[in-house]
Amino acid sequence: MRDSSGVTPQDLGFTFEDLVQLAEKHRQIDEHHVTVGGRLCRALPIVEEANARVKEYVEKKDVEAPSGIELWEKIKENARRIKKALGMKEEDWNSFSGQLRFAINSLDELMKVVELPDAAYKDIREVTKHYRMRLTPYYASLIMPGKINDPILVQCVPTREMIDNAGIEIPPVAADHSPARLIDQFYPRVLTIKATNMCAMYCTHCLRIAHIGKKDRIYSREAYREALDYIKQDTLIRDVLITGGDAFILPNDMIRWLLGELDKIDHVRMKRLGTRIPVTSPMRVDEELLDILEESNDIKPLRVVTQVNTAQEITPVSREAFKQISKRVSAVMNQAVLLKGINDTRVKMWKLCETIHEAYIRPYYVFNCSFRNPQFSHLRVPVEVGQDIIESMYGNISGDAIPRYIATAGGKIPLHRTNVVRRENGNIILRKPWSGEEVAYPDADPEVYANDKYAFARYWK
Ligand SMILES: *Cc1c(COP(=O)(O)O)cnc(C)c1O
Ligand code: SF4
Image (cartoon, rainbow, N blue to C red; front, side, top):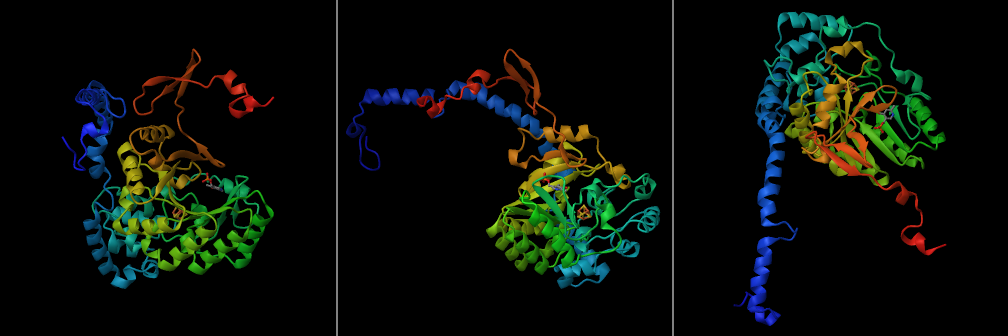
């Protein structure tokens, strides 16, 4: 017997008996020391049991929570209809300036693109006297006609509840946390600069609804200077978030200048930009902007933090924008808001997290919708519902697609359930989030931990 290189087992010093023994050994164990019996009787049933946990999700995900990629044909059809209704040319649609120029700001414009019952139009006319409405034609094309409470529609068109709910307004705590113009500071080493109050679209669940105001504002260089001076003198600050409003609403020159100024401050070690524009108007992400991001990221890490609340918001166009951004920055992360009917089931939230993960975005936070704004209390979801949803992801989807669940109440407070159940005979009893099964986990021995004569230290007196 010769192999293809002409070598026989005898050449390698194997006898026939050796070969028989080897074959027998391989029949019983493989490289991971798994017996054939173990594989068939134990490992395969365990995989089957795991598969059962995601069965319902896999069956429902594309029906209950279709992505904008799956809906793309319908979205393109919507886009054609909206372009025509608003009198937009192809180049208007494909440019950010076109998207802003043709943004839907009034009921009359909305009526051209979204069909709703008359009573709804009447209420919208009333609400928009108090709250600002603006949606980009692109974002409007994601709305599925005829779908009751379409998750895109609910996020961008203000409803009756916003005035009905308006009770006692709880002032934003941020008012007490602004040590300098444009700055919000809760933490010693991270702060935010609110660089603008503008967004390409105004969300009905906006935490900064009061700040978003009636008038668009980009601030003067003088205001930015004051913010930068504050950051300069506080040497503890290492991470600066440029938010708004929406950071990508700023002109490229301004973004370049702001990032450049931050990069010049020695103790500022990294930056973040907060933007929803790749979701609401991905045409904004042009080559010049991408170059600016890369240039700054080369100096010190830059992350882009976005807000995607449903898989429906990820289309081939927004996915491409996120892909391009992800090539130029150190991370693209998502901060979703948990919203009633929009992403408040396991299927919808898992689908959101998997879809953005596949669009080069890492799920970072899921916020329980704020109690401070009565305008959108009708969109709030109980804390426990969110806990169930987030905990259900452990063990079932990739770990880096599982966001942290957060309440905002004077800073971000984690809402996760503990999986440490109790202590028992020196063990900690842990609960597996995906099955509820309890396991004993031996803790580190406190005596061994207290001994500092370990590793190489044992050789010294
Ligand atoms: C969210 C936020 C931050 C950043 O918090 P991280 O947990 O680091 O993401 C910092 N400052 C303010 C005022 C914030 O609202
Ligand atoms: S993009 Fe952000 S800041 Fe702008 S309206 Fe929406 S939630 Fe508010």
